[in-house]
Length: 112
Length: 115
Image 1 (cartoon, one colour):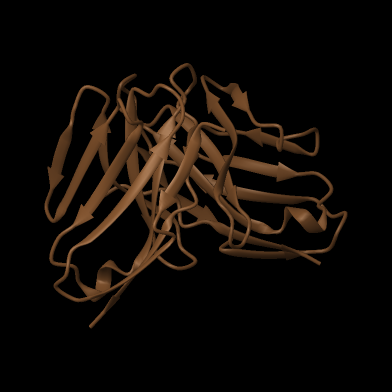
Image 2 (cartoon, chains in turn green, cyan):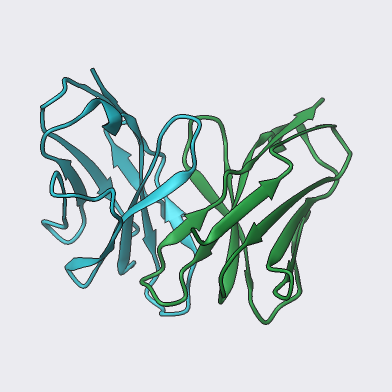
């Protein structure tokens, strides 16, 4: 399997706090993507970071990538109740038509 | 904003029956995918489709599964003879024209229940 584990498996915080989720992977990548899934719904693409980037920001999201450790983190700042969802990292196989391998995900609960 | 749509949202079928899940990808996208997610498990890749043919498939995608893009807009997944273990959420996704546009856009999913 290309994908390692995400941690934590579940995270419960209060509104306004920051949430950090981590993801590890096993093989070489050219990019890593984070997706969000609200309960029982489809996946929404959040952010993509390329292998030659170390950090990327989008609104309240900050993603880091450490290719030497084969790990990435997603930070959501000033969380809101609406951020409650499952968060997945996904890596495309380098030699492929882009199929994604997903981790188990982190279930984030933000309490109002 | 363009989006991927899927129909039906929920399909209940009996074991052994054929089902067709339908997807309308974003119109100028070139790469199409089906994934599935069994309740409580990871999202798993099934198949990718490019240039009117299957480009990759997983070991889950056996002879019972087939995909088609019959009319240039719809993208369908057919399961010929459903099994109980096919019960899952099935997601269609599409990806843009550019070779280096890697983001995939997912539909809301079809929940398939096999009884």
